[in-house]
Amino acid sequence: MSLHSEHIREIETVSLGGSTDRDETVVESWLRCIKQHRLDPAQACEAYIVPETQLREHRQQSEQLISIARSGLENLFRHVAGQNYVLLLSDRDGIAVEFLGDPLFDNNLRKAGLYLGSEWSEARAGTCAVGSCLETGEPLTIHQTDHFDNTHTPLTCTAAPIYDAQGQLSAVLDISLLRSPQIKASQNLALHLVTATARRIELANLMAQTRNEWVLRFSRSPEFLDVDPEAAISIDGAGRIIGMTHDGAKIMARASGLDWRRPANLIGQSISRFFDMDVDDLGNLTRTRPSEDRLVFARDGNVLFAHAIEPHYPSRGVPVVQERIPASLRRLSGGDPHLAGLQTKAAKLAGKSLPILIQGETGTGKEYLARAIHDSSGASGRFIAVNCAAMPEQLIESELFGYAPGAFTGALAKGRKGLVEEADGGTLFLDEIGDMPVALQSRLLRVLAEGEVLPLGASRAKPVNVRILSASHRDLAELVRNGTFRQDLFYRLNAATLSLPALRDRSDFDWLLAEILKKCTADTGSAPVVSTQAVLALRQHDWPGNIRELFNVLDVASALCENGCVDLTDLPEHIQRRAGNCPVSTGHELLDEHARLTAALAATDGNISAAARLLGVDRSTVHRQLRRIRQKAAH
View 1 (cartoon, rainbow, N blue to C red):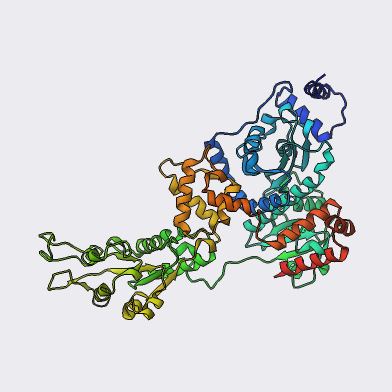
View 2: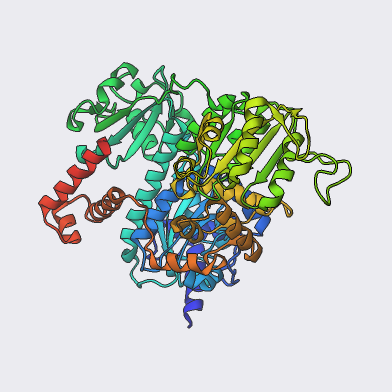
């Protein structure tokens, strides 16, 4: 009898009430597949990847979770790199909305369904880690012939649930192998790792959603309390529970005799129902006291170490809040702290008539900022942009200031308005002002000082009401010292200065990526998704051309990509090469050390001696690393 036939026979035996050595979780899933989902083990079901439009909808619905989870996914992937693991983040429908895997095996992964957009619901794929995790709400491993469908039996898949702050199952994190050792226990460490990562994602999500409320974090060990807490709950000012991680829900359920599967019964309850404390005691559980002294007594007699994090109320010292910043300026940033200050400053200056000098490297968006200031100013006139470096020196005078009839051979009989006059009542943006010829700088100074323009060949000046915004990637102060830029003009232009950061210094890269992709595909109305490998490669690039270079790269990549997904192979070769030479890294050594320790301790059930042997260090080194992590976390 073939292995396929044996597999079908075993499932049929179980469906008729026969016995098997399989885990109870697997048996229950097989029965659901037959009785509830009406699946046939003899009927092969190929992996299914949803259409591009459907994938986009699912990713948009999970956008916030993907953003919060990405750091944890990258960190986990880094620690299993070289072992051929694939990571999938699936939503509550079983659709993989994020994917991390080796691009060398893309074809095999796509065929096996270990790919972005694959559907792993139990109703479609049968017994599988993602689908069974969605059904049970618990971490599990589905190993090889545990799978219902014979197509999936080469795989081993381990998954952990991710619950939202209201206790609802919202996603599943899965780590899988195309080929694995025969023994199911070989995936025990993978189960520890994926469960720990899911727990941290839940905690990060809770912290993000309840920043302005108390958050109480728990651990059974004071050493890990401030570094890697096991559970958390959020509490409002009246002492009511308003959010929780999954393990936080279980702690409260055990303490009160309630069912964690009914999270609505936990939300809104007073903290005193679960613990021997009330909201006024939270202040005694902050980091002002040693972690071993921060004890909480649950109503069921359980004793936990606790860390209370105070509400992060909005700063009272910010005079211009985000809501008061005009929309055109808000669109400049996705939350970068440096740009937040620049937006506030620009919003204050927008309605004034002061000249503004915008500085920044080539391609950082100086003209975009100038236009946003104009749009926010309420000016009725036009926005006119002039690149002083691109305009021939013999034409720049007549282009800027215009000319009178018959001013020179070939001039129009009626004369011509210059760009300064065209911008009357509006804004004239002079890009690369440092390249303006010295002879013309005095004429521009007259516009700024006198509010009038003298066309070439004219005897009388014309009054103009124009605001001058200028920009340069060069150091104008240095040009003044070299005698190539007028000092008086410099001080006229430099009434206020706004400095744009280089792309490599911005913290909102992912937001910028999404915004540019929307612009690149505005004609089709469907922006592609970007694989995590491609995102990592783009982050590693230095971007000497800044946003302009990024726009060009994404414009080409979105045209080359297939199935609505920009992958590493769609990027320029020099970016691919650098990505291939650089190990995937989160950039946080503390997190790397933390992850190694956590994995070792999880694999040894918290035994420090055994963990030290696993890491190849002595016990004192483990204790020293724990202290260092705690000290850095405290700062």
